[in-house]
Image (cartoon, rainbow, N blue to C red; front, side):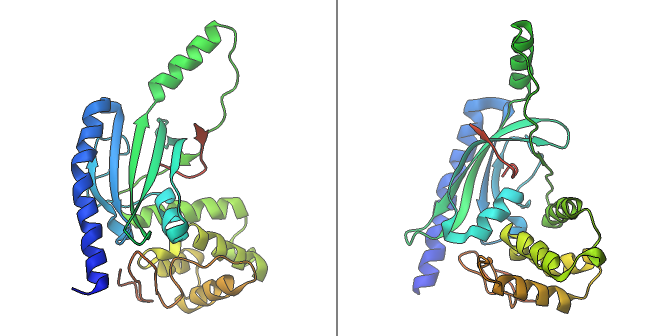
Amino acid sequence: MSAEAGLQAERDAILAALKPVVDGIVATFGPVSEVVLHDYRRPEESVVALAGTVTGRAVGGAMSEIGMRMVARGDDAADELNYRTRTVTGQIVKSSTMVLRDSTGAVFGALCVNLDVSAVAEAHALLGALAGAGGTPAELPVTTFGNDIDSVVDVILDARQLHQNRPWAGLDRAERLKLFRSLDERGVFAVRRAVEQVAARLGISRASAYSYLSQARAAPGAAPGPADASGASGSFGSLDSSGSSGSSDSPGGHT
């Protein structure tokens, strides 16, 4: 067995050993909890085990924005613990994301815990109001979940375009490179066919999108992306240019 095949077998064994843990945690914390086991080697369908229904996903579903950021950070990814976000339906969710590493230290997945704390937050607000200690709660970031990765990429694109507050045609070269750099840092281009999806949303050719991505990555101070413009990727597999593969509040999302 080659060294690479041995590492893949080791990663498979770690994931298999954690699958019973997923069910055990949810059995302990009950219906307000959800545990998701991710395999980052297949970003488009990273959910390999799941218990609970907090985010409404299923096995074979996609990662969220925070998972994509983890992929973008590669082996520099770190645990993100006890952060809060809000779903589009108004649920307040407290989450922790713990990265999985093989014996070489390479990140290849994550174990994620999501707790629906909406009722607790409402009780806290009510008790605060009764005690005269009420105030305006901090606005939590909203996260959209879907079982397909395209919907996650669309949400990120919508957020970036809303932030820009101008159409693509109205952006100068520096702003266009900034947009591509931002998308790259959030792990968008580690996803199969993401370049084509971004190009279609922006109304530009695939070749232009690859050119902007290459320039954004070559700019001084730019962090290396999870995959280069030809598709080579680190610990999580590879993507070619046609898309075949390999307590604080957080601005991210549930995992």
